[in-house]
Amino acid sequence: MPMTAPAPASAPGTTAGPALLAGARIARTTAHRAAADVERLNRLTGELARSVTDAGFARHFVPRRWGGTAGTFTELVEAVAVLGEACASTAWCAALYAAHGRLAAYLPDAGRRELWGNGPDVRLAAAVVPPSGEALAAPGGWRLTGRWGFASGSDHADWLLLASWTGTGTVREQRIFVVPSAACEVLDTWRNVGLKGTGSNTVAVADVFVPGHRTFTLGALARTEQGAARCHAVPYRMVAPLQFAAPVLGAAQGALDAWVRTVAAKTRADGGLVRDAVPAQQTLTRAAAEIEAARSLLLRSAGRADSGEISPLTVAENGRDAAMAADLCVTAVGRLMRRAGARSQEEGDPVQQRWRDVTAAAGHPMLDLDAMSSGYAQAVFAAVEPDHRA
Image 1 (cartoon, helix red, strand yellow):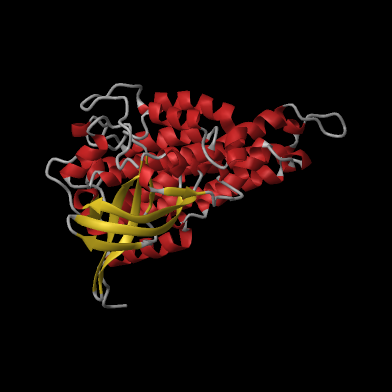
Image 2 (cartoon, helix red, strand yellow):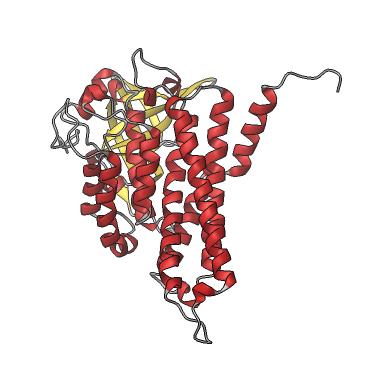
């Protein structure tokens, strides 16, 4: 069994290919065409996975030294949202392929060379929260065994990032192991109502040796190499919510577009057009405004991550804004679904499909508005000088 992933076609040191947003628009066409297959197969098609890679998602946060883009979070949010208009599952996997490239950049130099020495277009899936499995220290590295759930995009990954606890007693730490897909078994466990096409299956590993240069600790995410690009210098918690919220935004926009196309030609029982009725107009107005508000929140958060101040408060603001954006999208798509009529209940209806996807995606812990509210409130009150007269 080979222990390294196949070399990608591109060569190190190159940044050939379309800009991410332009690439996402091309991939969106493929996603539209493959939408029914993605739902049926519970994973991306091979053509769609290649289209996402060709668009530039896998290389987006790979360091420039290894031929990557070391791109911005604004570019990622915009591109993922465009792709999500056609297929939320595809957008979800694309966002995570990009995000996991950013995580892998924290590997030691030898590990990065093994991943990207032949080019940056390497798809990385991950299951890092919560840690699972068992990692035992061995000469030169670790031996890894266990099962990890919800590894989105694992069917088409070249490598898997898997987290496990190491150490004993009070001296324990979370360590991330980078394992070639050939050494992993992808179990067909993903049967979700929403985001069906993400292929977020369980991954099993049986006593696989992982050399030390292909591991790093969670604590490494708090360290920044001298001269690192901005995307490798921001805290994980400042940007992680964005990668989950952007597909929600895209799916909500896709639901709105599909709803408008349907309602534009729909007639009432009296022969009049539904589009001329006040309830339909109010639904359109409210949903469109909610989605635009969500877009503004996410782009502001992405801009803050790209160039703003990094502090406990700005990290908390990003979490707040991403969770609030997802909440707005859930409200908007729910509003559209209620006003879509009986035919929207049919299998394959585009509004209903996006309603399922948005609901499922917004349930991710990183988009939990209650949890983000707690963190945001603590950061705000910590920054206030106490008034001892109170």
